[in-house]
Structure formats: structure tokens, C-alpha cells
Amino acid sequence: MPNEISVCNLSFRYQDSTPYVLKDISLTVKKGEWLTILGPNGSGKSTLAKFFNALLIPLTGEVVSCGKNTVDSAEWSSIRRDVSMVFQNPDNQLVAPTVEDDVAFGLESAGIPYDEMHQRVKDCIQRLGLEGFEKTEPHNLSGGQKQRVALAGALALKPKVIVLDEATSMLDPQGRNEVLTIVRKLNKEDGVTIIAITHDVNEAIASDRVIVLNDGSIVYEGIPRELLANREILRANNLSSPFIVDVARELRKYQILIDENVLTHEELVNAICSYKRII
Amino acid sequence: MQLQTNNLSYTYMKDTPFERQALSGLNIKLDSGQFTSIIGHTGSGKSTFLQHINGLIKPSKGEIKVGDWTISSDTKQKQLFDLRRQVGMVFQFPEHQLFHETVLQDVAYGPINFGLSKVEAERKATEYLELVGIGADLFTRSPFELSGGQMRRVAIAGVLAIEPLLLVLDEPTVGLDPQGQAAMMALFSEWYKAKEKRSIVLVTHRMEDAAKFSDQVIVMSSGKVLEIGTPEKIFSQVEKLKENGLSVPESVKLLSAIQSKSGIELETGKFTKEATVESILSFLNVKGRDHDF
Image (cartoon, rainbow over all chains, first blue to last red; front, side, top):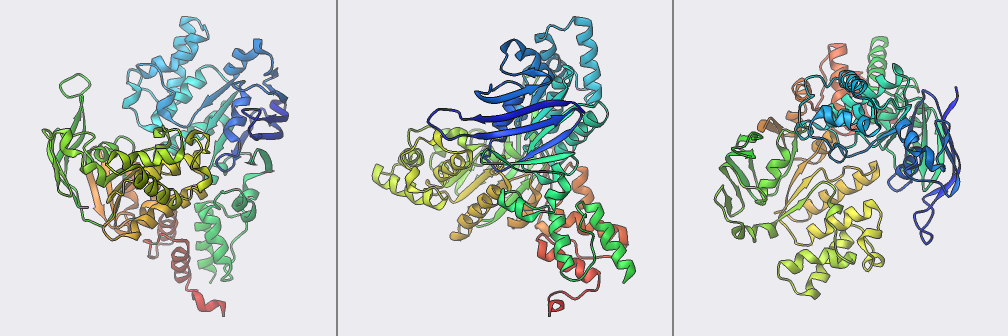
């Protein structure tokens, strides 16, 4: 698989007098991959994300997004069309008076012809399950619906990569599930590369790969299952170990045989119930 | 502080095409000294209700009683000045409300506004900055030079420094990492327990926090109270909560799933890891603590 994004020896600080926020980061994201970036507050996650679509430009090191070097200002608008971002607060990213106008907003700015724009808006609204809300004012939507409108707007530009910067952290449990279900669909069915920044280790379970940032450096890289079972790494990076993993660990102390791989509710329920049948 | 609503209703943009009823006939009673959590999906009216507690918005119909104050549609703003010293409001992202040149000045602003001398106000500010874990080395810094977590602590110290009796918290831990969230909730819990008369009303999407800290939980839906009761009672209704776009704490989710898969009843109203493990051990007929020898 070719690389969709490659970051090479990137270091960054906001001012000459302040400490480095990113320290010699090298990272590649493959086409079609779903990468989770975890890390405590202030670790540099959101700063790093802004380099993916040329909202920040490297002074030290290099970032190549979808084959284009972000240092080249002539490529910025094309990079930003290829790499879409959805931010944390749903109220800060919807601009138009109705849902369909909002989805069309980016297309209009990108100069997409009217007929095609119409079709794309319709497709994206349908894809994200927002039919019936076309004429609704965004502020009358729930948080999960608002984030889906933001995703529809991003998707309408046919991006290769979608970056989610804590896009579910302000949502209620149902809104969170709505958004995660859609993200999974876009990744698996449409082949969109996903980069998801989060504090919630449970959100990492479904992704292909996870990196942990701390104090501007990548301190861990691996598959989610291994990270989630690694209590030391989690604790050292202000991440909480999943409840299910903790309960399974406790139960093993009582000689109850539960596979080390158990991570989800369903897996633990099955393990406990089959143990019950044996004894 | 006691809090009671009588048929409280609120309509946004009344008599316009955008009219929307956010609260309809709300009847809630909270005793003094209680920790109450309010859960409900987006748009259920939680934040609208919170804004009534110190009169930021006034009822369209009905009334709300907070301590010695009664607020109805014709209550005048100036009657509420003293109420606002007793009700501290922490909104989402309270750090957005920081404005002063230094951390100490920002926290002292509230107490000065309520009539304390500069010296007294700064003494209060120092006390509460220490409580939230902001060291004296940061007092003279601009609040905008701090990290997000520190900024939020400063903003909260500013609310605590007016020494309210009732603290109203609207999703106070959004955006913090898990350890930051736990530390922030521990801080509120500590503040609450330090004096008997203190009360908290917390709006949260985090069912774990609602279960762990509350004396009672209110479930809101479409501007009404759907359910009110102890965490044990509320979180035993897995299906009902799910229908309303809410979830239960992970412990309850796990224990309920074991119950429905095995068909054997077990205690599901457990909110800590230890209690959950105990419940599973007794389900498996494995003895708890003394198994360790």
C-alpha cells in the first residue's frame, strides 16, 4: 500500500522562546488505513493533525500529504481538499442556515459545477443517514447529527483522508456511536483513510494501528489490542486501561481462566459464561 | 441549598416561527447538601434548566425556588444579585471565560465584584488556587500562557472563590484526558464533602461519574423529567436508558449482559471495579477475598 501521509523528522514550536511541541516526529499513514492517535492533554496531538492538511507548515522536517509536499503553497488548496478535518465542538464548524447548504458550502468554495454539486450533496446526505434533515437548521440537531453534517461536508469534497480531532468527545453516548459507525463505514466501504485523535482507548479498538504521543514524541506504536493490554504504557501516558481489561485481570487472580486477548464486553461475557459451564 | 421547581416551562423565541419549547412543566426537588446528576441526550433541556438555577434565563411559566429566592417570569435581574454569590456556575469550557492579566487577578475578580477588599479577595484567590492545584509560581502569569488543563483549573478556582453553597457544573471534564477527568471529579467531590451545606448539580454524559458521585440522578427527555432516583435505581433500567439515547456504566452493561446470556440473576447495581468482580465471583460460585489465602 502506498503512503497517504508521510511525516519525516518534524519538529515544531509555536514561538522561538517556547518549548518544542513536536520533537522529531516521523510517521507514515498508509492508504485505506485507520490510525488512532492517543495521548494526554498537551502532548501535541492536535498540533500534529494540523500539519496533515497544511494548516501548519514545517520549518524543520517535511510533511507529504497525498503525494504533495505541504511546504508548496500552490498545493495547499488541493491538499486541504484531499485531507478533511472534523473538530471537537460541533457548534464551531457548521456555517450555513440549513443542513444541505452546509454540506454544499465546501463544494461551492471549491468551484464544483452546480449539477454535480447537487448530486454530491444528495449522495452525502444519504450516505450519512441525514435524509429528511435537508432543510433543517443545524442548531436544531443533536450533537451526533451535527457531527454527521460536518462529516457529510467533508465527504462531499471526496477526500482521501479524514482527520477526526476528538470529534466524539462532546457527544452523548448515542451520538458517539452514530459517528463511529459512520466512520467505520467510510473506512471499510469507501476506502477513506482515517486518522482519529482521541483520549478514549475504547475508540482505538476498531482501528488498525495506534500511536501514543507524549510530550511531543511518539512513545508507542502498535496494534490496539497490544496497547490496551499494556497497563504500564497506558498509565505512563495518562490513558485509562479499559474497564473490561481490568475486570478480566482481577478475575484471573482467582484462577478463572480468561484469555489474555479479551477486550470487549461481548468477549468477556462469553468467557465468563463458558467458564460457568465448565465448573 | 434547597432547589425546587413548580411546573417550570421555558419556550425559546416565543411568538416567532422559531418558537421551541425546551422545558415543559418540570417538577424537581433537590434537598440541601445533595449531589445530583442530570443525564439526558442532547436537546433534552439539561442546559436550559441549569440556566434557570441562577436566573440567567427566567421561566416562561411556573417558577423555580433556589434557597430563599423565587424566580418567575416577572422577577427583576437586580433581585438576583445576592443569589449569584451563592450559586457558582461552571459552564462547558470555563477557560473561555478567563480574561484578566494575571491568574491571581482573574480568580480575585469575583470576590471583588461581590464586595471584598482587594487584599481579602486575593487571600481567597490564593486559597482556592491552592485547592485546585495551581502553584504560587503561576499566580503572576497570564492565564493564557497556561496549558488547557491549568486554564480550566484557574477558571474553576474563580467560581469557588466566591464561596457558593451550590455548585452547578455543565460537563466540566469535557476535553480532558482520563487522568485529568478523574482529578477534576475528585476535586469537586472533595469540595462538596468539606462542608455539610454544600450541594452540587452536575450535567454529564459520563454515566460512570453520575453513578459514582451522586445521591440522586435525574433523567431528562424532551424537556421533562423521565425518571428520578438513586443511581442504583436509575442504572438498573438498561433498556429504558438505551431507548432515550443514554447508556449505563460499563459495570452495569457487563453484569446485565452476563445475566441475559446465562439466564441467571445476579446483582447488576455495582459501579466500581471491585464490586463488579465480587458480583461475577459469586455468580461463578468462587469465593471472594479468602480465596487468596
